Image (tube, rainbow, N blue to C red; front, side, top):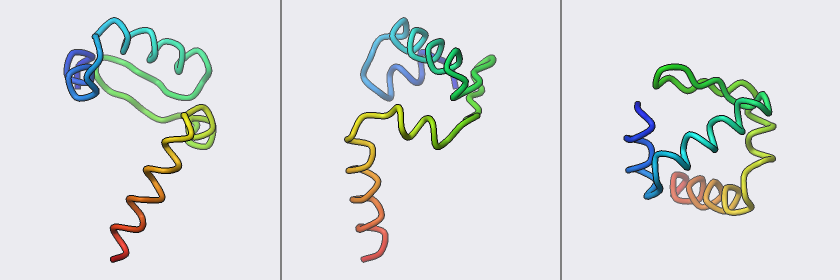
Length: 66
């Protein structure tokens, strides 16, 4: 997946994906090499996410269990 693809999916600009990916790499949360994203620290990534991540996860789990 390219940064352009990811930007299109998220409705943001490609440069913002580059900035975010670089910051997450520097924090040791992901590795991003040639279109391949590897989560290096899931717990850290979840903690760094906004509160909406937990809300979306709870709702997804609720809908999946219906």
